[in-house]
Image (cartoon, rainbow, N blue to C red; front, side):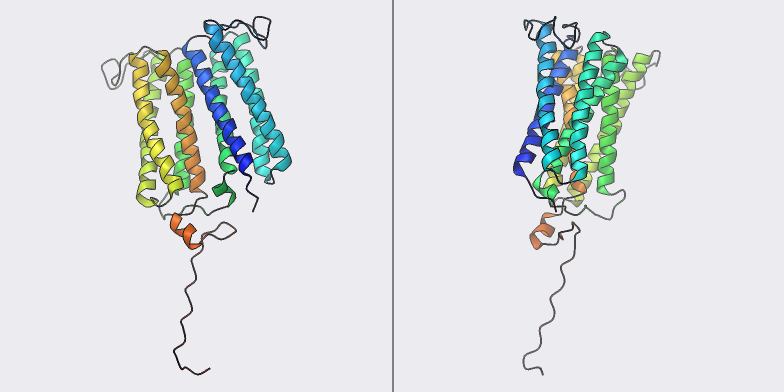
Length: 331
């Protein structure tokens, strides 16, 4: 069993929080249309620190936050490479620094190529992938995870961790569709909500309408899957606080995302709801990922209190006590 390092875990959490702030900054750049406010890269108007006015505030601020997140990730990769005993966790840290470098290059190409949709979508999706990596590192260094606890088993199909993985994958797919819609200008292709041009199914007369409607349909699929996952946890694993909390949060985030999506359309892509919708999607993805990982590791509070988790990480039944001999029996 690897040793638990509280400081390494705390630092991974700091990196995850910095990445969340980076997602907010990136969302603001797109929502405010500031992607080309600074037309050169890697410098800004040929310098390092331009006047922070108008769109420059959002674009250059985004670059500063990205540089900070990159430096934090570099320290994380070096620290984990030297101190982490689990090979797969070290490789996750290396993948994180590789991803943040690739993300920086994509960000530069986005500016130099004048916001091409393909590069912009890849930049947005890789940001979500990077967020998942640092969240996974934060979970992998937590005390409960290091204890190598047993997977959750409830006798239902699919297993809880599989259902969680499905939900996580669907949320990520939905984020990809949202990025395509956002960076191809399809956000208002269907201008009304909850109906679409006053109908349940709109006339699919353009690619933009098709992309927008697909995003709405996918939202229903994601909501159903996440609600099913949460209901399963609350019904069968209520005694596992490490599962119950993320399950409730995931359901709340789904409801919030639906409301923010509707508000984004009704407000004609106002900056605050549009940016909050992007960040809410990232938080939902991270929550589903955490729930999935914990479903593969966390014992029930009853098992933990009775010592039914073996050092190797398997739940083991407590052996029944041997029957006591009757008083006065022969030796």
